[in-house]
Amino acid sequence: MTDELDGKTNRRVAQLLNRLANDPAAEAVHAAEELRELLREVGYHGKAGPPVHKVRSAAEAATERMPALRPTPAEWARRRRAERAARRKHAAAAMHLRLGPAWHLVDWPLPGFAWAGTEYDVRERFLAFGPGGVYAVLIVDHGWHRVALSGDIVQVDNKRPPYLPEARRTARQASQVLSAAAGQTVRVDPVVAFDGSGVISVHGLPKDCLVSGCKDLDKLLLAGGSRISPATAEKLAAAASRLRATG
Image (cartoon, rainbow, N blue to C red; front, side):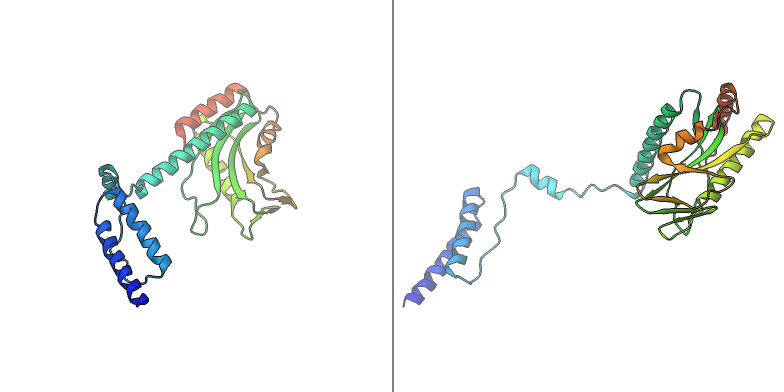
C-alpha cells in the first residue's frame, strides 16, 4: 500500500511539475527545477515532463537568433596582411634605430617565392643601404628547430630550404634594377638572418652569402665599413623605393 501511495504521490508531483514548467514566470521555472531534482532524489524514474527553458529577455532572444559573426576568407586574408605589414614596419624601425640615420631600409618583395608547395618561413625581405654598401636581407624564422649550416647547405628540421639561393636571387634582381637606374654597376650582397630560439650550428660558411643571427644583423651590416658615401646610399634607397619590386 505504501508503494502504491508513493507511486501516486510521485505521479501527482510530476503533474504539478509539468504545470509549473509551462508557467513563464521565473519563479515557476526555478520551482520546477527544484522539484525535478527532488524527484530524482526520491527515486522517481517516470517521465520528467517537458524541458524547462530559461526565461530570456527580448534582447537575449534577438541576439541568439543572429548568425555567428565570422570573418570571410577575404577579410581574414586582409587582416593577416595588415598584421604582417605592421610587424614588418615595427621591425624595420627597430633595425633602423640600431643601424643609425646613415642607413635606409626598403621593403623588396619578389614573386615566385614557393618551396615544396608551401611558403618559406621568410618573415621579411628588404634592401639595406648604408656606408657598408647595399644588402639584400632575408630574415627567416626557424622557431625552436635546430639549424645546421655547412657551406651552401642549410638544414632545418631535417629539411633543406633553399634560403641561400633565394637570398642570392633577391640580390641579383636588386642589382640589375638598381644598376639600370644608376647607369653603372651596383653591387648588392645577399644576407640570410636566422630568427628563432633553436640552436644554430655552423660547420662552414658560404662564400658569397652573409649569414648571421637576427640579433646580430646590425653588427654584420655595420662591419662592412665605409664602402659608399651616405649621399650615395640615400640616392640608391630613393631609387629602390621608386622601382621597388611589387611581385
